[in-house]
Amino acid sequence: MEVFFVAKEVVKKIKLQIPAGKATPAPPVGTVLGPSGINLSDFCTKFNDATRDKMGDIIPVEISLYDDRSFDLVFKSAPAAFLIKKAAGIQKASAKGANQLVATITKEQLKQIAETKMADLNAYDIDAAMNIIEGTARNMGVAVKGVNDAEMAEQMKEAAVEEAAAAKREAELEKMEAEIEEQKEVEVINEKSDTEAEESAE
Image (cartoon, rainbow, N blue to C red):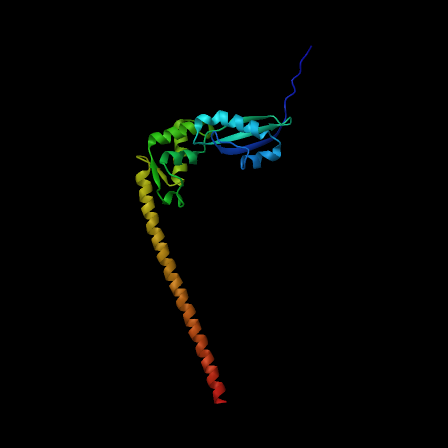
């Protein structure tokens, strides 16, 4: 007797980022997965069991949902920005990008992050991966000690000087505009006074 295996059809792919070991059927997980018909309890159990050893990290997961409502999970490494903030010991990245230095990491930490993200990056070797992560860190205001920290500190000083100069120019412009408006008001008042004088003469 011949046995035929029918390949299951993927009907939907869903990507989520969830704290390791902490998936629950409540929002946002339930809100995203509920309408797909996936068994939320089963998903949470599988996700938590597979990620419990990474507690504290944010884990991206790709869910392939099949036509019979079964599913497969593919786990990715934590986002680079999350790993950089974790290594730097900060909660938020710079609001001004590379123009505001908020933290510094070591070259060894940079290498560890690059090794963790290697599979997800379009990089042929660890050096290329480190360059990518260094660029991401720079845009977050995080320098790498001994690599670009002096350069970024200088860039921050230059940005601060430029920002102060721009603020000064803006203040001067506002002052000029206020003076022009004041002159217009005086002219209107004088015109009104001349008209009133003519009416009085009549």
